[in-house]
Image 1 (cartoon, one colour):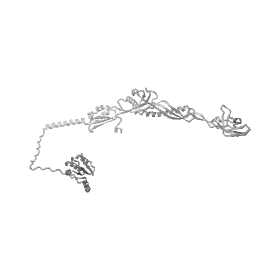
Image 2 (cartoon, rainbow, N blue to C red):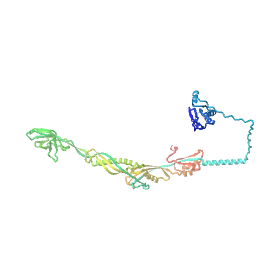
Image 3 (cartoon, helix red, strand yellow):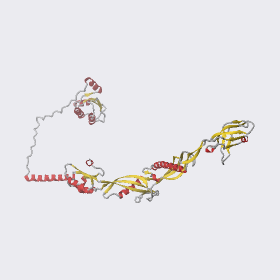
Image 4 (cartoon, rainbow, N blue to C red):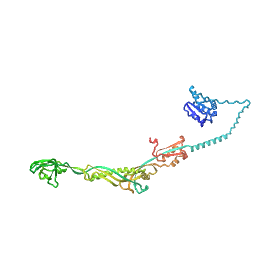
Length: 513
């Protein structure tokens, strides 16, 4: 059950709208005593009763004012003095009392003394003469003809859709960059630029290609010591023995202590002091003992002393340094391009051509090894000051668009353009600091004069309009003419009633199939 409480601002029409929106089939309307205006006329309640009958609503009213209750009962509504009485009645009977339709008051009888009303006499009909009927017919047909002519002249409308033929063409446009310019020079194809720069760092490693010799191992062997004294003599480990021949003698050290008996001999192992094949000597080449022991002991090597080797190893060459510089510089330039590109694009619509990058200085270059040093890998940490020229995309596109317009075929209109930025020219072919190429793709459609189309088709049959358009215009697909109303066989005479649409680059569904 839905309850509607009437407020002071509600009138008969407001309550009627609330009843019309009621979703349930049972409605209880409460009219408080405080509502002191309105709801005093039977028509206020009659309107609500009729709506309830129309929507088949089970409706009852709670009216605290006894005088208004009497007025509402006359309208045929079930009335309760309080909401509690209404709910108690609903709980007992399960429904409200039905809404009673009131019959209109009986028509009052005419008193016996009133005179009988007389019916008005029908005036006599006069038939007009034949000539007047003919004249009226002529005037009627003339007016109808004028109305039909005016309708045919002003009411019909038409929509003409044309699909002009299109072409695509491509031009390679050289664009020079001059940082000294302030504006774009469209005639000569030169655009201004803004210089940006910063320091960037990179690291590169190369495998060394230089060759050198390296010694591995020390020569080892045994020497024979002879005691020149008449008593035992102890030779400590580390005693130096050497050869005497050559400009650079080979020196060896004993590796263990040895005691030589009086006027006797003893063998002791030795090891070369330096690495390399210089320590390899033939038998009987070691013949001197250095130090105090040289006065008491003689030495010789009955067998060769061998074991030291030399081999070819990788060392740093100047070519390796140059290659490391080249690789590190390439990495720095790649980092510089990304960094300066990001710096250039802080202003929307700008970009940095890679070919505009220039190395201004090398603040830091640290090699891991020097030339001639033995190593398999040479590393280089390189920091460079790199600058580039940031240019505006719209400046380059303006020059390319100008070239597309200059080479536009006669009778066509440029409707779209697409641009691809390429590499820089290897040679200086422009007036700027450097020149790069832009590949411009143009998309043009045949030029169609709408005023000429209107003069061509207005006021003629639709079939004739099709023939004229196909024979006079360069179209990619047959035209479409839609006349409203559809049965009207002519194109409207008034140009204002004809709409001409050109759709370049798009074919109708029937043409695509």
